[in-house]
Length: 307
Image (cartoon, rainbow, N blue to C red; front, side, top):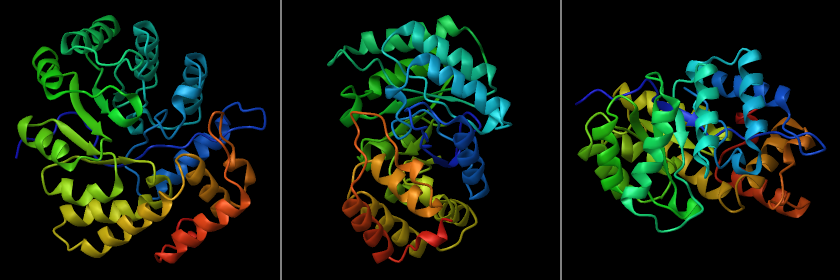
């Protein structure tokens, strides 16, 4: 099997962003949450993604958070920041800041406002960002999430980027939910690190040579996901872990991310400030939170396991 490009693999939570009462990111709590996840089996940290409400923050806020995490001692080689933006220069600035923080890689959405772009346009966008950053240390993981971004990353685009930037474009997060797309990418592009964006696809994707998973639910179940990843590579039977993880994801999916996951974090920590989200997202009601907790505990995943 061809070795995977880049250094990132395994379980990477799509990290939630805690907020202060005024809606500003809570830098200290974010750093503490990152440390907690690393202690609970996370191999790296997917900060500023969809789950982290990245596109509800300004570029300057994201830059300050990156600087703050580095200052708080979060190792750069454990960070995978989301650096996608519609404006090329915004993406360039975010990528440069990620490199300054020592990030092992960056997760880049395509420019997502204009829909149905041509392959030429998609390639031109990523190419211009890479060229303007102009740093051989840049390792780009493409973020394929057509349901949210409205712009898929076609295989033809991936193929052209790999040909043009074989040492820079090293992998992708596939949040489409389409396992065949992930399996095909892992098989057709040797060494290309394909991460599942859904917990229940971690185990089957590993069997196809996948790199791991970058998921929202890993904020809560990172240790269980780590047991699957490490157990699989050790040759152990992890089917029971897979079934439990899949059931936990179904339970958590009863309410939207990230409000549902933040409600669960509030329940785990006893800290109500965890429930805060930025509009247009909406905090779960007390009844919704109670229903979500019952659903999670109903599949045998006690919140005390995550504490």
